[in-house]
Image (cartoon, rainbow, N blue to C red):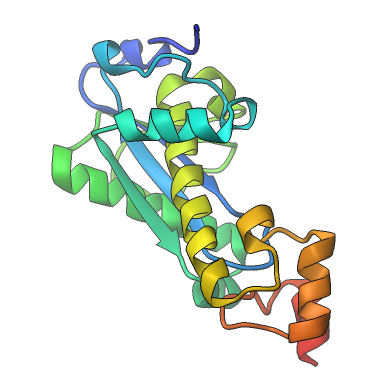
Length: 198
């Protein structure tokens, strides 16, 4: 199986971090970001866009990543700041945590077109999760971590289908809200939840 290889990272002399997030759209749960530092010899086989990789393969790839940090912005922070600001906050936290472990990066490659506030040089790359190995690895790490969290939360809050929908606004999630009401893990600033909270 082939996948993304060493690419833009080779342009920089020093540590390169890839950063991505998952969980902007769900009605419930935090937004989760990951920062990953790869080297040419440790790129997992089959590394690709997280959306094109099976759940089992994502878990296998995530298990091979050794130089990474995961960070979140909580539901309370999402509601207070807005989802965009909370996403950038989670990214900045992940980068800071990885820099504390590994040292100052020469470049931080961020998926998307907006950069979080960082103390390091950074570059935004649209569709970076499909084209840049370190960003793809970060996307997978963030997704595996957040999916596992929503699976755990579903055990304490059955009836919303979080083990399947991961907090996204599916029909079973909407049915659970109508039947069971709002939990502390729901984003009250999101319109479907705000309507119920009135």
